Image (cartoon, rainbow, N blue to C red; front, side, top):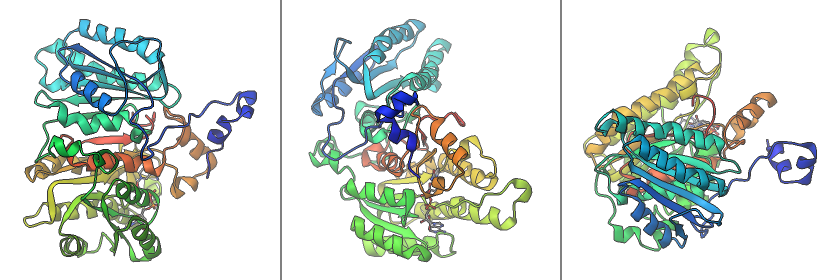
Length: 450
Ligand code: NAD
């Protein structure tokens, strides 16, 4: 169901009727620059990332400014990794206030802060934590599709370790990721050498040479994940149930990948998947647990069957396959990346979705518990939690529920399947080894569960 308000927003009729504006979000198109214009890069205290961010931005052909002038800004990066005192925080406000005034449509605010748990003293911890409230409030104030996000870094993190996250948050790939906080630690495994990252192919094909499994790839978000990872260079192994065989074959053909008809809840599913990967592809680099189902009913009317089928597909199958990936001799390569699809319902809860919300919250618990175990193998596991995404599922909602879902977020619209896929691609990069056990929402900064 198309978003009528968004369509009208770009016409004169909308102004005449006084309708609210729905911004057109800038999304990634191969060949486009990282940002269309200048970025302010500033540091407060002894920030150790500003220099590297400036160099990176300039390498992308984007001017990096050290002070706000007359130019419209397309991005603002403030390195607060060295901020310790309230005076440092006040200095940040002095930088941010004039900067956000000059920020253009689909602009980007990215703060880099220290890990509060590592701070020495209450003031430093308070200042580090304050960035959380600051960035979430900036996200709610920005207009015209601009976003604000925070990277929290541990003291052992080098500039190279945040490179893939800075790229993601500044670029159009993060169009629907707003008001989020991602924690970066020293990378697990062997990240790619900088020389390879500088390869001209690296930005357009950051997943070149990587094998990626996507479950539930026949349609919807899964099909978009397969398309997006393939666009970025990955070889796709598309998985779905036999009944979705036609859509599955279309995904495999479109992406030039292979199709595996498999019910992920079958007792031999993990064996069949891992054997397919070992025999046909010599292993796997990225596993995207996307397949999911809903069987909505109020808890008072919930049947055992509805409960078990949702928990089985959305959580049980992921637990079993992850154990198999962790087992000795598994085909998961070093720098392997497991990315799980959770949901805003798992964070905020949702009426009629006790089974679904329990399964999606369970995914978050699983990711956090397994992160250290994947790290031991030089791999990572993370989750994305989509909010309101324009799919067949949300098109079937009653009009009022659908309109509500679309508008109660900072970007005033639903996200697209590709927005979820882009966040998965960011976690999937070999250079993203500093992100482990993270849950990032792709929800346009939804007010639900925030
Ligand atoms: P969808 O129903 O369009 O697609 C899900 C796919 O998973 C289908 O192709 C289906 O055949 C497959 N699948 C179901 N059971 C399977 C099984 N046992 N084995 C293998 N494949 C199986 O759903 P979607 O909207 O694209 O959602 C994809 C994921 O995103 C799900 O995990 C969903 O919970 C999550 N999500 C969606 C939204 C949204 O707004 N659409 C919001 C939050 C989270």
